[in-house]
Image 1 (cartoon, rainbow, N blue to C red):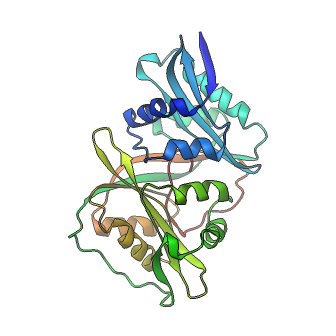
Image 2: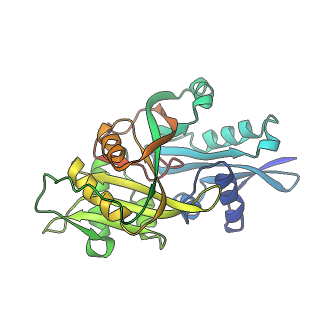
Image 3: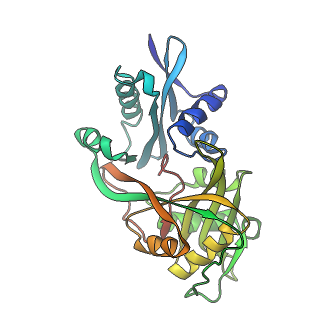
Length: 291
């Protein structure tokens, strides 16, 4: 018998393992944040009292939600489990004005039949970083702004900046994301304490071993984006992954110059009216699972 049950803290290891096995490279603490952003937003499929799949359908606000973390164990595919999870997610989000997701290329047709439309290509880029590597120091257009660690800038300033440039406000998610104990956060702050960009780097779980994921990564210009990235990469040796939106060609330019290589691509898709136009201040996404 198949049941769809809400996520509980006891399910954390199961969902993390599902994401890791699918090469999602979940960040340390990511799944907990998904569940805490929307406490009815992560679901598991159970068959004969064993977990066989999961999905996240997280509502940021009445205008915007995101579907991700959509996994069915390979040995249980073809049995309608994915369709049940999908239908449950859509029912959960029935009152939301716009729903976003990142689609694997082979799933685009499925989502189009559900009313989603293609928007742009998201590319995951990767490099093996060593601290002794030379980092580009492209000048920013803002000489009055300094890059500082999180404790030297107010969370409210970062939230104000994020709200101006992201597709929809996400203050609760952002507070959980930036204050998580894993990883580091840096922000571009002016003398008045206002934020002009920020970045987070966090440890992640690769199929074998661990690495680092960078995101969100937002900045006012390519030079500021480079300075923030330099601070994020410094002293974080190993495999580094960054998911870059197709609407910002400068992200590709910066990362290619540093040796990042494209690894995989997904298709950003939306159903409904997008709350706000895209912003080229977004260089890297927080995570594919929540947009």
